[in-house]
Amino acid sequence: MDEKKISHPLQNSIRNLIEERAEELHVYGRKVYNNSENYNNFSNVMEHPEFRKFLDSFLNNEDIGIIFIELYREIEKNFPHFDPYQKIGLHKFMMDNRESRSILINNYLNTKQISRHEDRGLDNHP
Image (tube, rainbow, N blue to C red; front, top):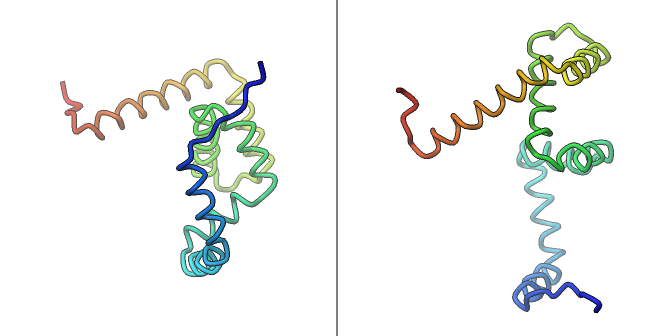
């Protein structure tokens, strides 16, 4: 039996409404892009083909993707004099090394757990 993706009628209505407003969205989006540094940067990154390849391959597992990005940021912060090849070399070494990878993952998971407790308003003190 051939399975077809069935979409909800409301989804089709919303999609049609969005399509009908495409020109208005273009004008509005251009205004947002030109007036918001955050959206300008976000759009530029999301439209960049090389970043999209990274996004598609590394962020299938969002935790690994975040660890990957955060490690690079930490390397930049701690070794600002490193050139891009040195940063990538250190990054690859740390990701390939069992001990450092384990530390990175555990630190990330602990930070994530603490963040969840803070979001819930839970006290982290014993």
